[in-house]
Image (cartoon, rainbow, N blue to C red; front, top):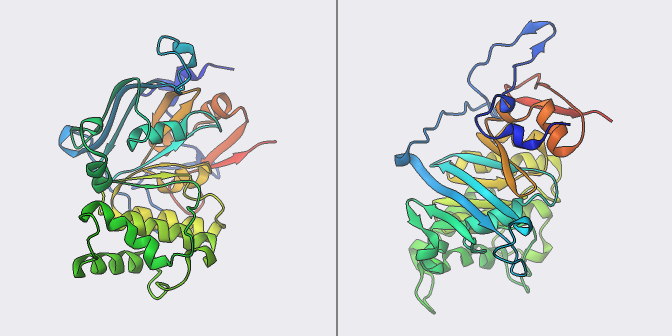
Length: 308
């Protein structure tokens, strides 16, 4: 089996050859999302960059700073452009959540930098970061009897003074977010009585009312049925906010993400479009399983079928 290092960004190994369908070569046209809207091409010049991780390394607190063998993340270089939906994929324990935590100022890297719109996030206050970065974590928070409206309105806190009452503008922003996620009319429902899909949409609404420049989503489709998985990721795409999301289901990542980064043993071993990254060789090397990669019969993105 080849080393994953073979698939570093820009290497020939990270490129895929477009498969044929029923014996005919498939010409690649504008990529389409599952709802039929054409994906736009986004530039990655400096004027468009939203998030940049450069030469980042991180280790748990108990690890020695000099003991590079125990670093959970090493040599991380990642960029996200404004409006881009970028997926983070890799096996369990590969370092995806650790990377996300560095990106939203939860875990401080031992070296390297994390910049948001050219601002080093560790030179800015937590309040500033909360005004610019919204996070939807894997697990649902304890709501302690709060209503859906209460939980959503919490997203306005970074923009308010201490003990400030919600303004008319705050309430309008909250209502707009609830409408965007399809929860208008659910305001007085208790959060702990909602379904898994409704909870995730509520947390997405809370993220939206922060009016962030960047959204960070950690396994946002966990515990959701197929319908709610498609609805949630489709909504994220439609919002047009720069997004970095770890996604467990590779077919969902292929369907919704503009680009993918592959994390393996704490390193980024490949990056590119879903067609560039999701090759049989890379999947075998990184995930340890054989796969058939072909073109989805209805849409222009790769489809992965795992081979027992």
